[in-house]
Length: 257
Image 1 (cartoon, helix red, strand yellow):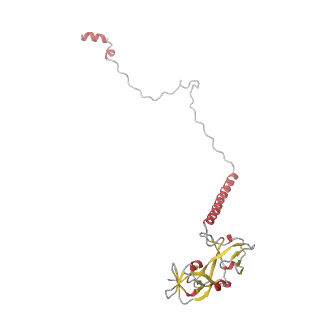
Image 2 (cartoon, rainbow, N blue to C red):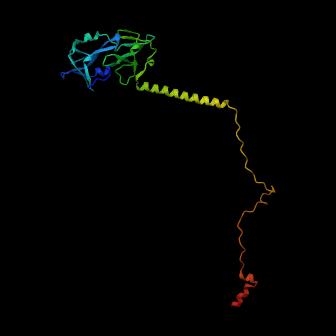
Image 3 (cartoon, rainbow, N blue to C red):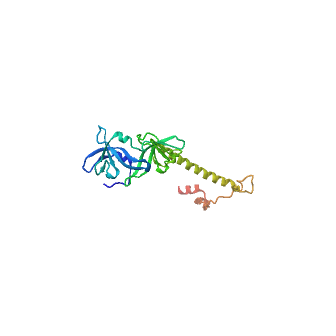
């Protein structure tokens, strides 16, 4: 299994260490770093749940990474927990800003596995053990000074740092700010367009034409001279035969009797 180019320290510490002999040496416990140059030298694992025995591994002993294990080559160095507690580290240190107020704590780091260089630290405002908490990226160049348990910067707040991972609340606030900015931009455009309309000369709307009223020769009685409807003319009505002859129809009845 090939090594990735970079890895989070928290991901490395959660892996269980397995050596080339096939033996398991427990999960990662703590990082071993050199703070002045921001470099990770190795990490320590706890082989058993009982006892104070700890195993220290150099970073160049790491040969591969799987989903659950860190594959190492060679023998570790044995030490005690008290010795590890005296190692200098920036992890779990308080991050202070320009006004010497505590902004958060350093909880994680992105490591370049080939050289051990720390690319950037991850800062949390709340307890890092809480799931879904936000993380901000702190580059080593922004650190002014380092003291035991404290990292000094000139930051006015964590918002001056790029956000690496947002919590649900932080993501909602960020989207709300973006929506507010979009609404403000749309409002400014509408206001500018309205001002442009007001500066133009007033316009006159065309008057509505009244419907033409038909004029009649005699306005007193418009029906008197109402034009005849084009009714089709019928032919002459046929008259009874006795009327055409001019005879009396009763005479015809007497003749028939």
